[in-house]
Structures are given as structure tokens and as C-alpha cells.
Image (tube, rainbow, N blue to C red; front, side, top):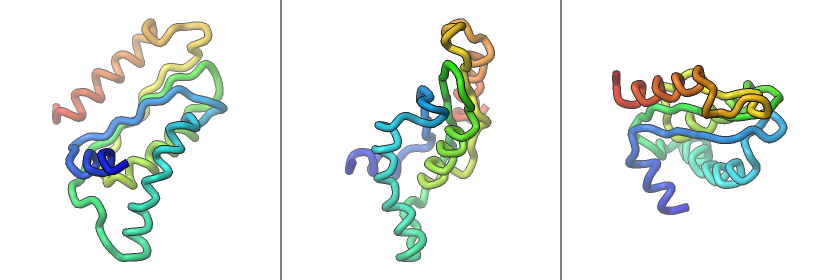
Length: 121
């Protein structure tokens, strides 16, 4: 995790991408990101600013069914914990059981929009 913490300190942008499992981010992703609790503790208990550099954030989700909203909200909580002050609207591909993500033109356009957002365009 030390390498992850160092990366979070240095980066300008943070992207969370995940398939959906039961309308939520995956368990392994949540397991890793639960280690970001250290930032919450620093802010709320020690009155510190653990990450000074503001970031931009985005979430990309893929799922066969279920709701995207809960997973996006979880992603936004995680991004804000990493000092993402500007978060792009959700980009997702849905119903991947019927339509492969590679054929979802709206999702592909959304990925391009995230790239432009991260690059200041």
C-alpha cells in the first residue's frame, strides 16, 4: 500500500474502473480501497490534510444488470477521500450480457470525454 499512497500523493487524476457485482464495486476493489480509511482518520481525528494536491476523478462501470448509481456513489466517496475535487459524471456500459462493452458507442464516447477532462480539454 505504501506505493499506492505515494502514487495518490503525486498524481493529478484518479480513475476507478470496475465491473458491477450486485450493483456495487467488486469486493477486491473495496478491500484495497478500504485502506484509504487512513485519510479519513487524518482529516477527522488528527485535523490534518493528508493529501494536499487536488485531483480530478472519474468512474467507469460495466455490468450486465442492476443499478449503477450505488457503485458510482461509492466511487465518488473513494475519489473524494483521495482529494478529488472535480469528479466527471459516470461513464458506464450496461446490459453487457446482451451487448459487449466494445460495441457500446455511448460508453466509448464517455471514455474519450474522461480523457479530455483529465487533460484539461
